[in-house]
Length: 129
Image (cartoon, rainbow, N blue to C red; front, top):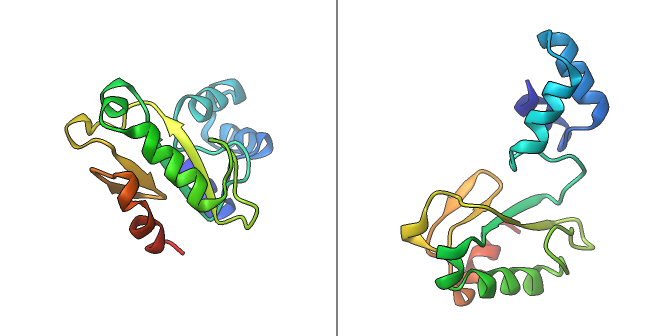
């Protein structure tokens, strides 16, 4: 239900969490706990393209910070967690995406991309304009 609501509305507001809780017979606190725990749920509006960059230790050793910096600079998003002025990009840092052997992993919307480098960022971004 949460995934459907987010797909339709773009994010999950407190009102939507309360409605989902009521429909599923759960407490609003339980539903909010799920939404706040998982990084795939958005609690505020995000850009057309939601980009997640793993910046945990194994990925940092392989250049995740440089990938993050390139994404922020080339999209105009500014800081991690912010959305670009044109509304096209939200770039966030996340914990492990489960691909330490293929660092640096990046997710763009529902697409998983492995072995991203700063040099590969322009090509990656061109696929989502």
